[in-house]
Amino acid sequence: MAKSKKDYFGLAWIVSLILAIIPITSWICGFITRFSEGKIVAGIIRLLFGFTIVWLLDLIFMIFSHKICRLLNC
Image (cartoon, rainbow, N blue to C red; front, side, top):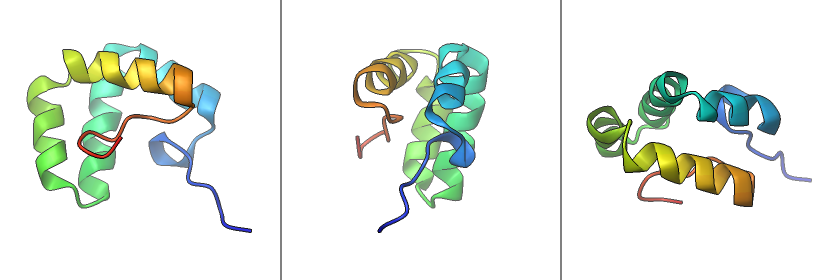
C-alpha cells in the first residue's frame, strides 16, 4: 500500500488544520513546505501573498478536502 503524504511536515490532519487556522503559522509553514518541495515560485508567491487569498484557500481546501492547497497544484 502506498504511504499517504501528510500535510505540514508530515503532521496529522487535525494538527495541520490548527496550524492552518492561525495566519502566521500558516504563512510560515506554507512557504517552508513549498521551498522544501522544490517549488520556488510557489514559495515566493506564498511569501508575498500568504496573508490574503492563499490563507483563505488553505482553510477551504483543508476543511473540505482534508489536505492543504498546494498553490498552483491544488
